[in-house]
Amino acid sequence: MEGLSGVYDGLKVRMNSSVDDFRANLVSVRTGRASVHMLDGIRVDYYGTETPISQVAQITTPEANLILVQPWEQSLVTAIEKAIRTSQHGFNPMHDGKIIRVPVPPMTEERRKDTVKLLAGTVEDHKTSIRNIRREGNEAVKKAAKDKLISADDEKRANAEIQELTDSEIKRIEDLFRAKEKEILTI
Image 1 (cartoon, rainbow, N blue to C red):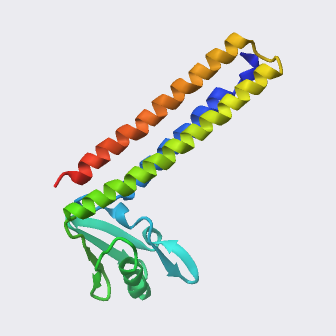
Image 2: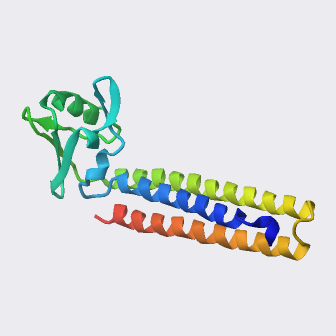
């Protein structure tokens, strides 16, 4: 199918990046255990620039329910504490002037269900993104057929391959979601 060279590969790359983006989203979703990635979305004012905490401090999890944040510069301690406190995570950080301790309280049943609900919305967004990529691929195939670059059989075969790719990528996202949902709901 000369008229479609690169279309399938381009779709595959774009769909893969959508799955990878979803996987990156999952890392920062809170489960019952502390994770350094819980603070990934939080930014702190670093000399006038909004900077991710991981770029201005060392973040560790010495215990299952505690995150330690050790800023590279002591002057950032209060700014980092404030950024963590005002984030949507609901953490209550404390500091001793050098290190910020972020206790991670166990999630309530209601909070677990809310987290899964929020994650379900993210799943739908990524599935929609994949379907939009499929639509663009189908339009490219349709245009190639209209311009007589490919035969009707090739058009049918290309559409089937694109649908197969779409189904497999959506299944990957759903599998990742189910695994994370199980992790979140497990106490």
